[in-house]
Image: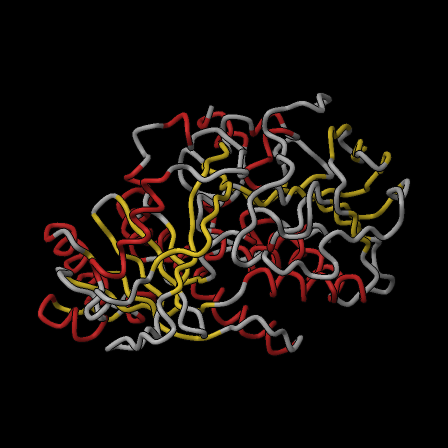
Length: 440
């Protein structure tokens, strides 16, 4: 890839999200005016995927630490990690899809991987004393369609009765108890699952501070415009040319701009998010202590309460889904998708939560973000097929927080020579030439 005008590159001057409103001192950091001529490991992307990978590599025991260079086209964590909902949870709707498509064993691998995120995030926050509002909690999936609720109830009860491990972590809430337990009106059923909420930008910037302390180098405002080579990789950047012994693509939605084999396999798609601020005097009848997914059959909103009583609310996809030109195959996060999504966000609390009719819980910020979509809705992880020196973790389908952190532990081991199959990662995530061909 040699063009500097590829439509899949990150766009300058994106909208500011709630998480990004107070930039970290390292947001525009460059370790030197130009990139070094060579390094052991180059990592492209400074969201959670890139930064946590660097952290795990440099935190490992080495006779001699490798030289690690992080490259970022814009500011630190300015992509999806800095624009998401700020929570991770056991995703039971994904479990059902995987069971239906790939079988129980494959689904169990993915669900175990999701549960691992919760404890892994807690451990690193405690170990590094990171202030990111991390809260170990529960999340409610509230189902508004009666048939959808029945399908999920029957599925979950079947898995629990079969003794499936992940299903033991789930509690089903019958329709008669939904409002009392969750505060949500008109739900036909709900599930309570383990979850963690946090400030993702604060997590990543704290980790990148540690990466620099451990000897890593950071280059923001440094666009990689082409990659060349197999046994080594030569990276042409806006701050010079860097030759890396090993290269990790933590580029999610932007991967196809640098690796042509992923173009059309990882497609950039646009989503919309908001920050709601109820009146300061408002006191909810049931304090929002949990995160939520409000599930309207095919579509869902995600809702994450903040410690100060405000709310992160994203989704609203049915308001724009039919107009694919505004959200499909685009990297433009300079604008919101549409006013209809924003209007929906402003109505959610009053319409769905008991006692919120007079809260005036409307947005004070709204923003967009770019996610990486794959045809099979699974990420691509591991060695880039056909390459000797390149690895990838990308294509998270808007669910990166459910999988990235322990995935980066595995990638750190892979670049040291461990094979994918020996990392414990779900087999479905492995990037293969067969998956690339099927996705075209």
